[in-house]
Amino acid sequence: MTNRLTNSDIRYFTLCVNSSDIDTLRDSKDLFLKSKDKPVVVIDASLEGESTSFLYPRTKYKLQIHNSSGLGGMAGDQTILELLHHPDVGLSEYDLDKTILLYGDANIEKNYTKWCKENNQKPIFGKCIYNPHTLIQRSLEFYLETYDYSSYNYVPNESFKPKHFVCLNAFSKPHRFEMINFLYRYNLQTKGHISWLNRHGDATRRYSKYYSGLEYNVFDCKTLELDFTGPELSIASQQLQVPPQYREACFDIVNESSVNDDDIFITEKTWKAILQKTPFIIFGSKNSHKHLEEYFGIKPYIELFDYKFDGLNLDERFHSIKHDNLVRLINMDIHKLNEIVNSNKMQDLLEYNKEQLLKFFVDPTRWDSYFPVLSEQF
Image (spheres, rainbow, N blue to C red):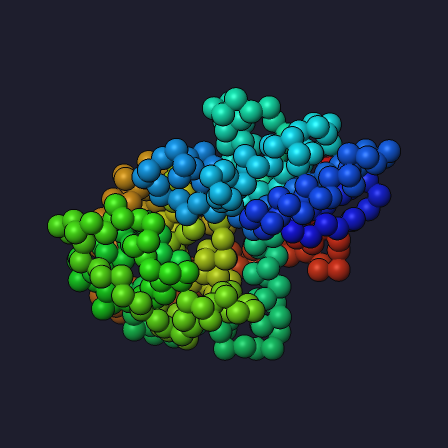
């Protein structure tokens, strides 16, 4: 956690959501509790956006589809959000109209209210604000720096692509296993490029439900690398890059970080596809594509995908993604698929979406470059 005085009216804390952050906040509480000016306290945890992690923590629910990250990250036997509500942290003693939470979930206000009600907790945040800009700004800064130097990685590719799809998976999660297992079960893996890095450890360590010898589990979870290894992905900005094989694929199967019906959390996995001018389909939160269009102006690729899955519940959503989209597209003649992807209509749309996303870039010299949503509050 970093404590940064952005101006005389704000005390800003970046929360990387772990127990040491809570200790730092506890040690810094006099900066606002004893201040005569009553500054606004901003807790920024917007590098994360899984709200299901605190709505359904592993201390109360055995079967999970989240990764216990964000405000639901565990410190001992409590979540980070529970620790933030402890009296010794100071927020519960402070004026409610002076506290702001920034988070990467588009539904954070609703989900925080729900959590407080279900856990009989008095709210400590007067405002819960959706802040996707932290992850967007990071991706855009990398893109613009890279593109200015004509880097190979982000040169749009309009040539013939020999593979139907690409699907990148670093951190092993249940929904990602289900997607890769589906591709292997239907023998579609040879028509695309797949990475499965087992980042941060063996895939079976948390999700035993998905690895218990079920009849249709055919993917063995062995590491599949395209460029970087799992540990290498944590170095510098390598997480924001795409492998060379990315340019050989007609579309991207984006296994997002969060896949549920409660939060909407969009990450660099989606931003990379837009900036790379590659059509993509998201296996993620309910209404992810709808949110991209309404909030960011990112138009759907209706020439390729049937988006009726987007508003369905999880099981129905996954079934529709597979059988209304992937089976059809991956079994399509590769030349026909290239005709669609390389058509003028599709290329114009891909360029439009890239330019739409670039509009969200904020001059990095601004104090609020990673959280411009705060400027609207003051």
